[in-house]
Image 1 (cartoon, rainbow, N blue to C red):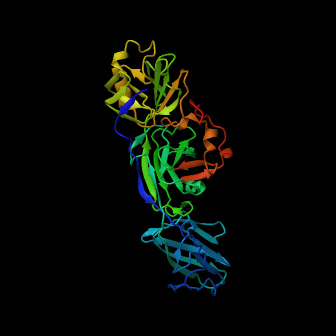
Image 2 (cartoon, rainbow, N blue to C red):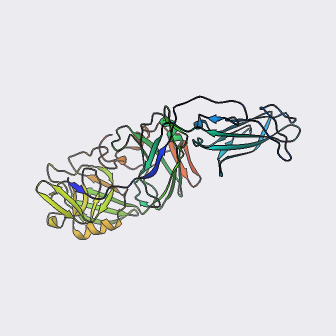
Image 3 (tube, rainbow, N blue to C red):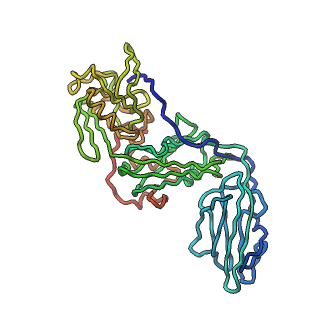
Amino acid sequence: MVMFRSLPLRLHGLGGLAVCATLALLLAGCGGGAKSTGAKTSGGGEAGESGVRLSITPAGGKTDTRPDRGITVRAAGGRIGRVVARDGGERVSGKLNAAGTVWHSTWALGVSQRYTVTATAEGSSGGPVTRRSRFRTFTPAKTFSTQIVEGYKETYGVGMPIILYFSRPVSDRVAVERALEIRTSKPVVGAWRWDGRCNLAADCLYFRPRRYWPPHTQVSFAAHLNGVEAAPGVYGRHTLTQRFEIGSSLRVVADTADHHMKVRREGKLFADWPISSGKPGDETPNGTYLTIEKANPVDMVGPGYDIEVPWSVRFTWSGDYLHDAYWSVGEQGFTNVSHGCINMSPEDAETFYEMAVPGDPVTITGSPRAGTWDNGWTMWFLSWKRWLRGSALHMAVRAGPGGSSFVRPSSLGRHRLEKPHGARA
């Protein structure tokens, strides 16, 4: 194990995400209507000639102090034909219920915004009835921000979790989870998990697939947190979006007792290299880690040494790397002499370095020492069953090209899972 000096991991995200202290609930009736060509407009939510009563919440002319409740359009005595809601030039997405009587916006409303809603409904007789509501949402007094580790259009390994950091503690975790959307080019099943012992931010949230990502999957992520109340009086202010991709499957299993490291690429054995791992007292800890970053070289500092080490790929925060160790080639394949890192020959280290991206699984076995949760990206230390317990919704996520939805884990059926290696969390 070593101290290191290398470039810090980049975080990507938006700044101040929003918030409010005043929670006056305004669920008044619909705003005043105006006539439109070919349609009758009723006022105050009263039934028109067609017998349909059409209402819009929030009410027109008001300031909405609960943007997390969204927009609701209701029709009594008829069916809704069309709803158009806009935030300036952007159209607000929403869904009509099966009966055609209630339309509700998909996500919370953005704070400090002006909205226009136009809804049309028809009853059993007469022409259509149209109503409009124009309102604004309040400006929050408190905000929270969210960052995502993944970079725009960057490539990651098949084990890479989606990692979110929050600037304030999140008490309404259900509301936040419901605001998160994942689109994938290939079908993926996974789940969110909160880390109550997050050391890098006020709160941390991770998404991990049930199994590793399918190689070459395109991922689009959206956190619709604008207007979401994450804690009393604390609202989101922006929508966080990101696109990235999963690259080739590159998986490592390093056996510290056998002194060899097997490398599989796209499911096939690519290499079986001799290694030397941590010596007694500095044993490399067991666990399924993920590669975090790489540098050529990394300045490694420890008791009695300060050396620049070529072709170094990091997998723990405490300073464990897979790297070139030209000084220990004679011991590689026979004995463990390192300070905790995985030593490789210069040729093998360079080959692995050129292939590695953040999120490639690295499994350490054969060590008498157990790994430590959160010393690196240790999300794969946990079984799928234990991972699910960390979701506020206790639900799995099914994602695909059309977006994501929450599903009961029992509905997923049996599936061969990745076997976790490592410490308990």
